[in-house]
Amino acid sequence: MFRVFPAFPDANPGGDLISFDDPYYHYKHTYNLYTNGDLAFRDQLIYPPDGRAIPRKFSYYYVAFMAQITGTSVQSMMLLYPVLIGGFGAVFVYLFMKNLANNWKVGLLAGFFFATMPMILTKSVAGAVEEDLMGMVMGVAAMYLLVKAFKHEGRENVLYGVLAV
Image 1 (cartoon, rainbow, N blue to C red):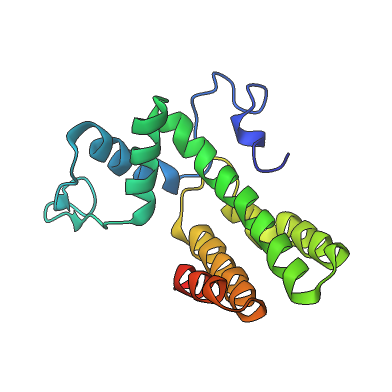
Image 2: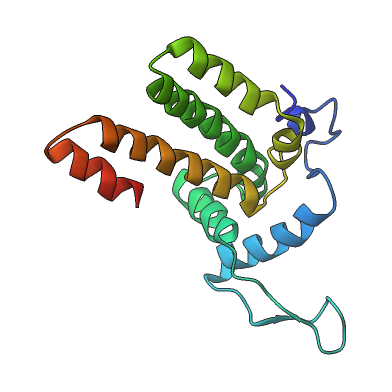
């Protein structure tokens, strides 16, 4: 609920605003990537007259790619990206702790803590497109696959080990 609140029409009159200030900077570069297929080398609107180098962030490419595939607008995908990644994170934390402790209750509690942790809520609120959350989710997913690799034998062990890398 907290994650998607900025996307609600009552909280966001008109429904076309992105929360915070930084996401507008990210939106500009993601939209340019979506429309032009590539990012410019420098942004002359930041620190004029020399400008600033535009970072090549994974989130720009991911959001533009998902908007292209799903046919939604870049703005809608920017609102959905952190919410979806935060949800995947809670699922991976649940799976990781369930397999590590061999108890689904422990996994459920860990997933709940991940979903309601204030630091993660600020990173996963609708419109906050940053790499921190994706890095955490990928790290937890790798740890989950590593635990699965250690618990299995034979070909499954190798498969999970390769997927974890």
